Image (cartoon, rainbow, N blue to C red; front, side, top):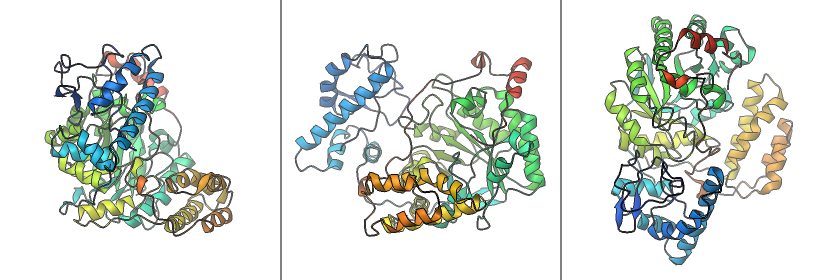
Length: 515
């Protein structure tokens, strides 16, 4: 099925106004990869919310239908436009007879340049041959050498050490960061927080990510980790878009307050520097396109001693929806002297190579793309080494990965099989994505309560089923679209914090071990 690479276009002033040749020259789209093809030729999109499709006939056929939805509301509008567009693109694919899906998409994207065509093709799920890059230079973070410049992005409830071990077995030279730990929970010696700071003996680099809004608490947490020799690398979370984090001024909301951001980075680096522990920062483009912070935050991180910065090329408002704007990564690369890891929409090795080629970033960070696919790090490592070898396991091999994951989780939970198997459930859904195993098998995995139950279900899988071609290098995880940004009261009034704001923020610092 042909799938467009962009979400529905709407004018910022009139949600139901479709672009015309007279309006498209008003202002260029922020994304270098966005193109709207007007009936009389290509024109740049003028809205941060791109068009449905680059195919003019598709736009013309959709227009009268979508105009009838003007009173349906934002959510209904988005859903209806996506459904209608999918139907029309499917019809057009069949109308073209024997033309392959890849050819269909390429024919609608030839208005752009060669790199644009390749990116659109990948975004639409077109199959293409493996691409390899020349050997990519290792990245040095203080005393830590990352020989393959690929990083596992921290994901709450996902990147505990059992999952990291499986990823590292496929890509032994990458950097694998533990899930985010809250600073206050560490200071209070929360047992769950301490469990999240544990590492397997096989892990080469012990990498943690810390979250907090209080500079003093962040400093205390960093000192606890340093004094107890619990890590080799520390990442600071300034990129989380989750409302319960941003409404407290944390995550991707925090860089807006430059004084608070600077103080946190400065204090943590001061604690870690004597122990030769490199500190890095994860940031987003900004709160939205009217409140961008990434360039300023990148400069502050560099000046205060961070060894590298990771940029997720979306705003907080964009959440995980639409497409990340890789051009912003290129901007940050050009502005900083320290390494920049690019993050956003890397679903396969070819995406990783494309990001490096388009942006000049020193390395890539993988988040949702590796959910249920720990072998992705092996594929990216091969591509960065110049090899076109790709791993696409059979169902039998995936079953063995599931079983091993269950056993590692049991060890993580100190022998509690029930907790381990319950934690495994979300991973099983990702592992089996695209395989023709049926709802009964999936439900049976969800009802497992012990390792024995998991073993029985794994043994029942057909080991000869090949990895489904239609989900190779395709998006994973939940696709959460743009939403309202939740911020503390008066957060946007100033770029610095007042005494009263700090009292409110620090008093609301949660005890949760992680988000």
